[in-house]
Image (cartoon, rainbow, N blue to C red):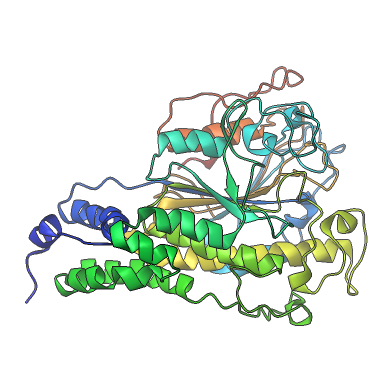
Amino acid sequence: MTLPRRDVLKGMTLGAGSMLLSPILSKMQAFAAGQAVAPKRFVFVVESNGVLPEQMRLAGMKRVTREDKQGYPFVDESLADKQLPVSLEPVDRWKDRVTIVQGLSGRVCGGGHSNNFMALGAFGGGRGNGNGQSRKINGETVDGALSRELPGIFPHIGIGMSKRIEDNVIYNISAIGPDRPLPTMVSPSFAYSNLFGSVAEGNSRDLYAANANLLDFMRDDIRRVESRLAGQEREQLGAYLETYETLRNRQSRLNEVQHTLRERGPVASDKYTSAVEIDRLDAMFDIGACALICGLTNVLTISSAAGIRDFDVTFSGLGLKKDKHMIGHGSSDQGRTYFELYDMIRRWHFERIAEFMAKLERVPEGDGTMLDNTLIVYLSDGAEGHHSRCWEWPMVLLGNLGGRLRTGRYIDYPSYGARGHRTISNMYTTWLQLAGSDREFFGQVDTNLAGIETHGPLEELLA
């Protein structure tokens, strides 16, 4: 027989898995007592090599060039009756939560093959220490700033994929302050161990170190908790635990999708240690979802070969022979043009984002789900192209943060220097204010935009 929900949750004691289950149970207890405040979470998916603005426009929509756009009116179109760009089709079922944003500039960042830390920092910088790894870090990045506003067990988690399988950690796009980079874990096994092994205790830590599965040492706790819960709480705990099953299944799956060449690529057996880059990145999406769902962090950054050292990665897992640098210079591969290849690679990322969203949507939270309180941002560290100049920075926002954002729209701002133009600094300020900050500006001022409002949020995005 189950006990009253508040008493069960208040009196629940845990064993080996206490540190991992405590955030989940505390949140459930707060909701049961009517004391919970709707959480806010931010997820950044940062891909290398730029996003061509013409690939983000809607079908049938003519988009003028930057040079012809002086004085061009602000565009705000509903997505309700529109077809998403081909690379965004995997998230079509959430079209009412999608916002495509075009026209924001980030000229202070400089441009090139990668803007490194400047992409999320909206600041300028030189070539750093000359080792080719990164440019100078002149400030905090927006994910680092958000981690201060929305602290968690891990204030910020950075994970992703490097072209070098021997790497465990790199420093490429995130920072907590000037010359204070945040790590990006690029080995799935390393990330798994550091994130989930770190919350194991006592004998469980030893078991974990011996490669015991996370659920193996949590099983007794899980059974005890489940047996004493009923209704929504039992359903919610089940949804939390379902995500761990993804981590148990370490076998790669073939992504036989019409728009990819996955069937021509190599078959890997263990995506945590695979030499195939998309297998490792696939594993990182699994790990990131699990970390978010179990309450380890509220700010997650997933890097897809972002940063100057990895921008020439080859997506061999999609059957490609040429790296993204060559593709960016107009090379074709496997009978596809560079334009089609960009779409294909981006679509693979949005397939992973769609799976990520589905996992969050399965987890009840308050009167809705975790997805309701999460904003996922897709952008490139390369702004508008392979050799970017940061005249504009296409972004895709997925989610409305509990109704705080107006979504289901295509927004295009007037071009650089034109009346009504806005910058990535405005966008980053918007996110910080949504997180509770009172900041009116983020990053570095573009002194060439005299008379353009570069401070404050993008009011047209706010509900």
